[in-house]
Length: 245
Image (cartoon, rainbow, N blue to C red):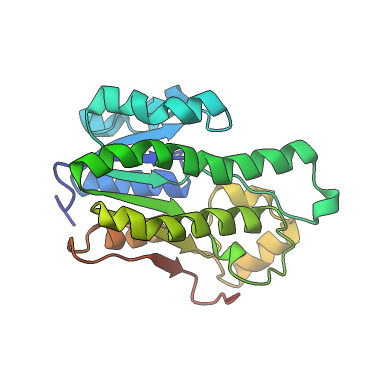
């Protein structure tokens, strides 16, 4: 897909090394886009994307903070002048039973997985609407699609929320020339799975029940490179050995 995204400016949140956002940022860079990777630690971002030179424009933001959620898009537009692709990927994970979860951790997961996506999407839409073009993509999860045997009572509903939000947004955005999509991965081996129960993690690895961040990035690239008249409302990507749908 060399140069498939040439001339485009892409933003991806949650671009910490080893995660889905990192892999997606690399895929878009290698497809010719200039990419704004966003995460909390600017120095780590700069080191991670240093080899891409001026094509990567790292930006630090803590999307748990309302002010930083509200000003992120304005800040980036001040640096780039345009945004063609906004990938709301930043997220947090908590598993286990609701009554056993820490209250602050619950609130952080809900805020990051919902408002951490919705607030910057709200801010970027007017810019895309004026230009009559753009792609908004969220990273959802199959954890919110059906009964979840892993007791993800907070993480699953938070992903259901953001996927439903973009589903309802999609028709209005399409009238303005903007495509809105969700990538809904199955278990993906990222730093987030460090929060899994150790036995579940070991069993999943042994059974081949993980996909890689790069495989999620492949799905993103498929969505972004459809002809202008096509849209992929939602793409579900799971390991072949895994079934929870």
